[in-house]
Image 1 (cartoon, rainbow, N blue to C red):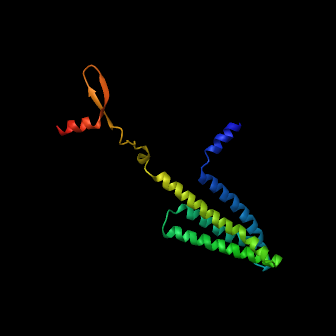
Image 2 (spheres, rainbow, N blue to C red):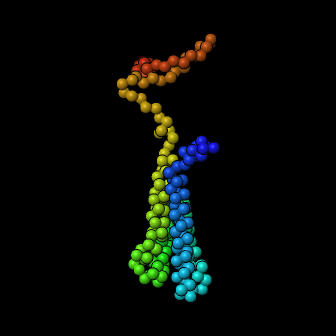
Image 3 (cartoon, rainbow, N blue to C red):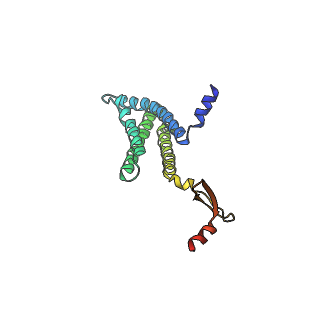
Length: 182
């Protein structure tokens, strides 16, 4: 049983681990933010105070998914702008809620940490994901190309056919170059 768990863990990539960490941090951030933002909306008698954190943090979640999906260009920049805007709204809302609840700058600072960490870890995960995609897109032929050292004569496989059998022999490159020049 333990060996199966170890085998499964050994197959987890850095991108998968970072994504799992982002999801865990995101869930905690959402939980803290939901409490603070819905409490703030309720304090100001906003209609449906439960929906305010869903709107603000939903923007962060949707923009994160879009930023991951878009390759590059204006659409990706727009997704990141929305993600940043949503994170700033969440930071400001959480800070304001903490100010009203505690009146302490320390409380404001603490309440700003979860959305800020969410933004930073999302950015780090996107960088790691992008790098892993770039590595995966490199042609496999480059990796599989044989390396011939200069001190060893290069050998090329040739086939010689006869009526009786087939044989394969390795000839130095110099022999073949001399034969082609003749």
